Length: 321
Image 1 (cartoon, rainbow, N blue to C red):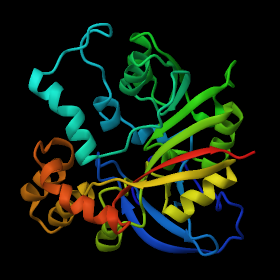
Image 2 (cartoon, rainbow, N blue to C red):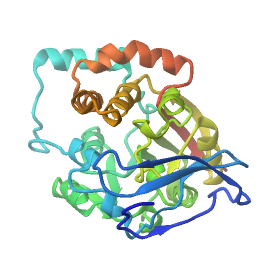
Image 3 (tube, rainbow, N blue to C red):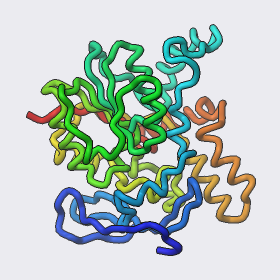
């Protein structure tokens, strides 16, 4: 590692495999340009990929600055009781567009409102959405600043790590975590906590980057979804299922999201590294800021999803009995 300013630790495979890792790649923080090089290794026993060594739980906050994307993107604008309204045409077309294009995820199971926990609730946008649908919502968020934004909206949020969060008074009917499992220092222990906090017929809904995607094979350390060192684990469908089972959950459905954001973003990193900085930066911004890109990229994302090689997964699981 070079120019590292935080404490690091080495941990073995969370599935309890005998130590036998191989180095897959070395990368660095491409989101904020913070210092440090980080190894991604693969357990040769179970094939789980992980970042090791990695920042400790006490120091990894260095890589989550105030402008961290998910914190900004999940802020709720306007009044909680009277949110800003979109133009009429957009409101009428949005349900049809979401059903047809299915950019990021598919709808949650059709559940009656109950108690919901969001792990990694950021600034509260999903809490807000589900509360407006009649759910009693609670969040867990590592960033105090992001959590305070949700608390200011009137939502209950525990500030800190999932592994150290207090047990709830009542169990949850639905637990969600959007792009959060890969950030946990001990995903198996975290999933066991969630299993203990869930009702017997609860749903767990998670989304994670797919390390089995075409983009990782093509771009390696320049893969847009790699996001080192924030992503401590890099799941394939197989290893995601293994970790869920070890944590007390059984997979009911696995969905490959119909997105190709990683291909354009990774291309931007590739061009940037070759000196084409402006063009590279433009491509890097397309996944988050390109208004037409979801439509243009949809055919590619659809094909990759059909081939089970798209860059993001959504999984639904139920507690094991």
